[in-house]
Length: 358
Length: 248
Ligand SMILES: Nc1ncnc2c1ncn2[C@@H]1O[C@H](COP(=O)(O)OP(=O)(O)O)[C@@H](O)[C@H]1O
Ligand SMILES: [Mg+2]
Image (cartoon, rainbow over all chains, first blue to last red; front, side, top):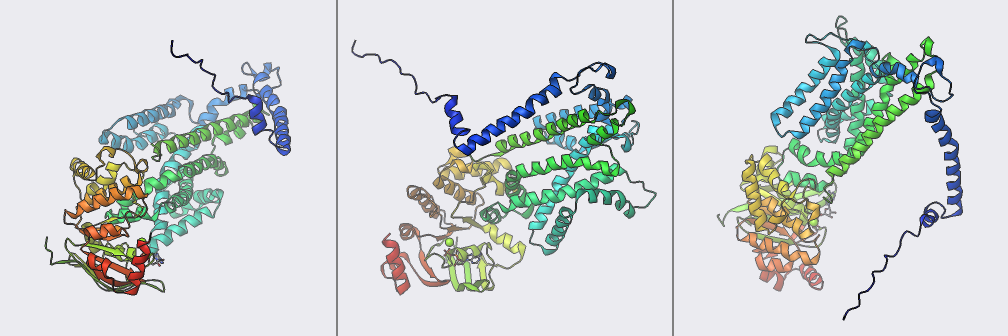
């Protein structure tokens, strides 16, 4: 044998162990060590009791009278669940919003899978009508007045309509503010600065009190619709500012290239500038949508009962006095789940649109 | 093509940025099919001059005729003149969110209304010509600077311009990539497209230019055919300038 086979050496270990990592990251200096210890102490103080309360000592089933443990009494949530989800929507019609939700997912699925333009147009234009009819009634379906809508249903309706409608308005306003036509620029600026300078509560009050003044009194103007209009106009101003930030980040060369290729204004915006500006703005746009979602809780002020308001309302039930804590914790978890999913979705969008190192 | 027609005419053109007089009495005629190179120190107004031709920059005084049409502030007129011209920028200005092929077909499809498959065919033809057809589905940031600039040239050609304006097309490139871009430009000359090129690549100027123009401080100081321009410069400023760039 000419060649000696050499035994493969073990790769140099970079797992000098957890101890090394700890030293590098948590105990690199005295100050850092103190902070680490304090943080662990805090976690130790908070987490175990919380887990005890929420899970180990919690009452998950049975009736109110049989409660023996002193943890969370989730039976309250169970009992009032339908109120949290539907408000005072009549029970026999729960299937309608449920169907609307299922249809939404189905539509989104088809919309993404199909390449047929006509199907897409059909979905795009029929969707709002079908969903509205299902939830509100019409075409033979019994009308459910909007003051009966409530809970998560109301939150989702307001947030979704607000988000979908405010987005294009916001983009138009942003383009308006960046326009070189003085009148358009001034009007857009006034609009944006007005709505950004006024708290949402004021807008909601104004839309429920002032808006009706502009319409003939016999035309009864739905309270929920007024609230949605107010929220949408408010949100549009914020979207406009976010998009404007994105527009400003686009290099001048992109505009010049589009101009020298003779692209007309709307095409150069639509194909060249906006796709890039919106891509940069995704995190901020989603951030803005998340705050809109949370802001829907202000609907309480004008007498609409969203998810949060339902907790207050159901815990005044004389049979269930003193169960707010469970209610608020539950609602907080629901809000968190929604907002967290939105920000995760934004992350996947960012990755998807990233053409830098595709 | 008619070599006797002035396709671009600057007549006493003046331009200011605020108080700053950036172009002073520019008079310049370019014949159809002619290749003009503009050089001069940085800040002398070379970019501004060629950017006036497709109205990326407005001017305040004088007249500018492109293909027989006077360039005015009228949007329709500007669009018509832009439809004859293509511009290649120092920093390429490709659209980073579109693939190479989409960069090339965007204007033909959405400006001239060319059917999509025909636009793709034309685009592939020009990508072949700039020797980059195999990259058609990539995105600009995946290409080297030299490749991106060749794509930018092909993007202009897809709109069949009569006039190509180059603003220092090689000065943002690593030295080893300058050659591949200049080669593509030299080949363009055979198509008879009118070219105005701002560049300091004197080899390129000597090889292809019909005329070389020297600008300094917003003025055209000297112009001549390449041989005389480089061998017998008249003005002191040009002598100084040529000395500087040759010692690089
Ligand atoms: N938008 C602008 N506003 C003010 N001054 C400008 C602007 N663009 C260019 N300039 C000035 O005009 C002069 C000529 O610029 P430019 O044509 O880019 O020069 P060159 O291309 O020859 O280097 C420079 O002094 C530059 O600083
Ligand atoms: Mg320049």
